[in-house]
Length: 217
Ligand code: G3P
Image (tube, protein in one colour):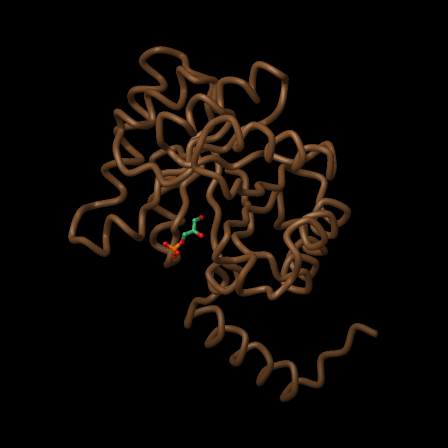
């Protein structure tokens, strides 16, 4: 499973990247707003830091402008994936940009039928939003499983990018189902390491190290 970091915070990306935890980055207008940075400037900085795909989202809602914005975004770096919303105009932009050989991430996916349309429009990534489905008492994981089945049934190469991940269980379930990629905020990725028995076990070892004065160096 590939790990993308869902943030536009450079320091957080760099910290995880140094640990080999970053296969790519996803941003969206809300994350750019949160960073307080210029979209082109911060996206370039992220692309310089990370080798894998960096999703940068268009701001327009009509296909023609989305395509123009996408063409500008891909000039930032070779690893840009243009992010477009799951609308007919978004799919039109997806088709045009992917036909040009660019990576496209189709975002705001909330149904398997939408994911099917995105795959047919040549999307590199489809981003089903798990957490936002859970927010309205639906099961985001059912959507990931349905898309996995459908893509496998027909051999679609569009990668399932589990997004709107809010908890470590979302990561675990997405991995179980076979999502190709998950994108999560840095805090969620960092909390994947937590286990009380690891802490307890290490405490006991440290006590014995001190009691027996065990030294290696
Ligand atoms: O990857 C999409 C993500 O940024 C949305 O997450 O938590 O705002 O639903 P959230």
